[in-house]
Length: 603
Figure 1: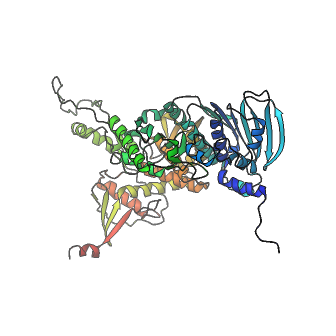
Figure 2: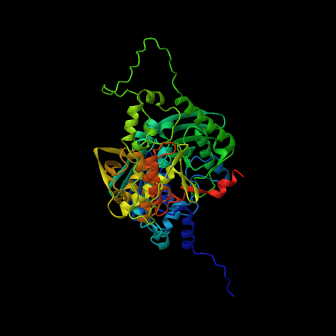
């Protein structure tokens, strides 16, 4: 009787093995670009068509391959990087398993043209579904050019589950960013659909970061540089003025290799503990150098998970290095209290024109001027200023009323009854009701109200837009720019008037009514970051995510004193919401303490 257990064919086995290494176009780009770096290239060019679905071409000026090596490179577990198992503990290259090229060749059509410096002619090989169809000498420059066409043509199930071109392109950019940051000594170009997206010349690390993420990040970076007998830590972390809730750039590298390391990530966050608002995180670009025999990179096929011999010691060194950097550069300046020759402060005379003093005001204390509600260390203190010019500030705040307009056509009509709200701790609104005492979180309640209005306006295709007198321009990273092009119709539905100026430049010409005065760059990048973290192809879900980000940004913060009329309007608007008890992300907006429960407190 014939047995049930069969040995798979070489082709099927190769396709299964390819799934561990190649799961999307970004995986192909990653493997080929890393191979180019290992080959000693100082110039790499990547050309894409349809985000890599149709064509991926990677050209380098590295050492190239002889004809025999070029053929052998497509065989399983063929590599020039190691010879025996002990070599795994002294690795200095990206690749070492010999799985990338055969895996790619198993699920695509691959052409390789390569030549070494001491050869007059090169070699051209064409492989389709692991079978060599063409192998001839050719004329080509020194280095290698890999052209991968029709990825997953023979694995339709895998091709079917690829995301949109914008999403797949975003993943490709992420992979190129990691290699580019780890090797600023290599010039890298990226072209997509005949348009150059990235052109990164050879540069220092900081300049490479700026070239990738824009000039604005330059002023946010603080240098980190600590060397011990265990590890050398260098790179940059963000100052306290440039922490964010979302969209931060966070990169760890060890010995020139990108890695994910949640444990070390917590070390960085610990260094900022107590200095930044809860929920905000810094950007960082940290490069670790350790002896090669103290780490194990052979943990996962993607080689981004790395095990360290001295993790706890390195954790403490990273935390101390970042904390020392932040403390050194964010140190408060010495205040000179010498009043000699100091002019007298004039008494405020309301009959004279008010001249605003040249004092830097932290607008985060005015939530309706687009600032943040949180107060960081080393911020401008406006207390004394407000004592001198308090009535001027009060007038200015009163000119920016809170927008409590409810969503049209509420499912639940508010009850017409007198409200007598009371604000507690500048955060909660207490409202007596028939059931007992209602306690409302003013920030969450306003998020609910604003979200309902933004969504109702967008769905009715009637989102009001406020044009800007002077358009604002800013630069998106290549990955964010790819997502932005996909989301542009959603931005328009919400009331934004944005122009794509090319190469990641965006001009803000109009914003939704109620969002005036915000930090538009941060708002838009936060909305994009939400969808990078939780990607979705459903337009309705995209709209919901973006409307929630807008509501969070524009909502009144905790700590903002409200007038009785403002509290009353907020309560009425909340009661008009289709779902008043929860924010869109399912957080409680209010609780009710029954009279019976309150009575028990005094039994």
